[in-house]
Length: 126
Figure 1: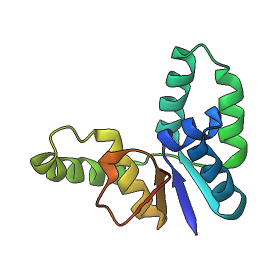
Figure 2 (figure 1 turned 90 degrees about the horizontal axis):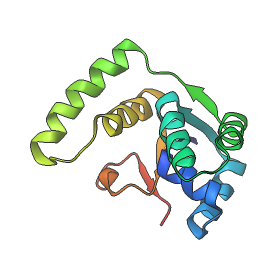
Figure 3 (figure 1 turned 45 degrees about the vertical axis):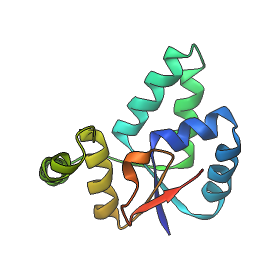
Figure 4 (figure 1 turned 180 degrees about the vertical axis):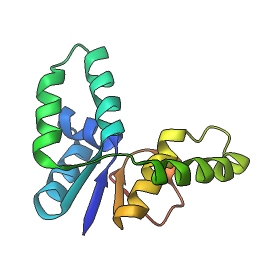
């Protein structure tokens, strides 16, 4: 199965939490992807916590295939975001990009983010 790992799941993995252990098990047996924007989110969080952002980058890069946002997916994400925002006011544009990317990859989203609750593409780690 293809898995798109969300930033929240990468953070749990890098922190070595109980949820991170679940991520670790999935990394060992599935085809793993990371969106380039997810890398940016993780690096920002790690840097703000004064942790080793270079190590985090190496871990994500070595454990996943990097999926880059292309214009067609950006368009789809924008349309999806506009629809979801009608019902969920605090749903982020990056979350829409993640959903659109997962659909493009035919992948599940591994996450700890409650914004993805109710989407069939979601696998929660907590």
